[in-house]
Length: 357
Image (tube, rainbow, N blue to C red; front, side, top):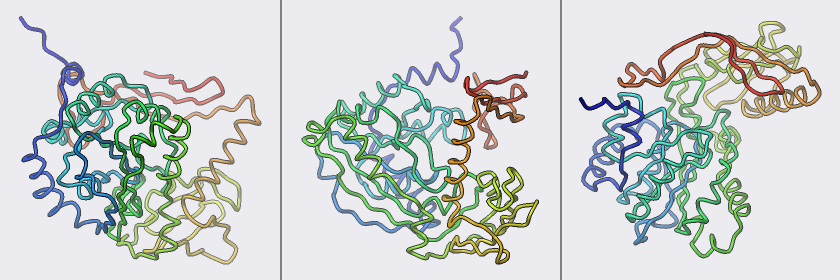
């Protein structure tokens, strides 16, 4: 009797090529255009037309939100894109069919994934266009993260044209701490970032340095200049304490609470209301506040870096649940893993540790 393959084994056996143009037409014209894009009000400036390219290419984008594929598709259509997507997403039933139809490539996060490189190689050799986010994951804070090491080496190896989807405002429509969709405006600029000749001349480090500069975006700083109203429904601060946990006034950690449109310290009442323009409105004239949520998180990061460097016995512990990807049945009901244990996550100078069941 033939052995039943696991989901990961089936995924490993897939072959990749550009999606069928008819399926791509349906995906863009019957899904993205009428149902997805109108919720976010994107505006485009197309400086270079990727459809003039006769051969393979890369399309890169700064990963500000979970909906970034929308702007990439609209900015490049009718060019067919083959997206590189987080490996774990291929175990969720709601994505299974569309990922198969458009030949999405799975990529394991934060590791050198040989299988994903082979898949990209298959698409490029078939004359296709590979679309990926060099940061590796969507923005946590509202601004960009450094690109994954090795991105420059990948681009230099293939020496094919590289285009950029530069987006501004997408983080403010939906982000990690609150899943609300907040319509405002998204600005998208599309242009050629590197020619094959430029990739040939530049070193790997020079390519990555230029990438980090080109991809950089802080949506809160952009919003201060553009002053776009977003429909936050008085929930701009909801769950914001997952990011903003330190009070600059009383110097305590984990005393902040983000609820509805208010973020405040439960110890000293330092805080602010956040309006539809993502502006902090202090609760009183004694409040001490960074200028934006992204600046607040950067401030917290600097504090924790100093603490770790100055304290050789630094240790942080948190109660967690442990999840694993399914072996045979896809995840349903928006689940991202199967809970298989619980315990403590410990971070110290020796690394990350898990103790529990």
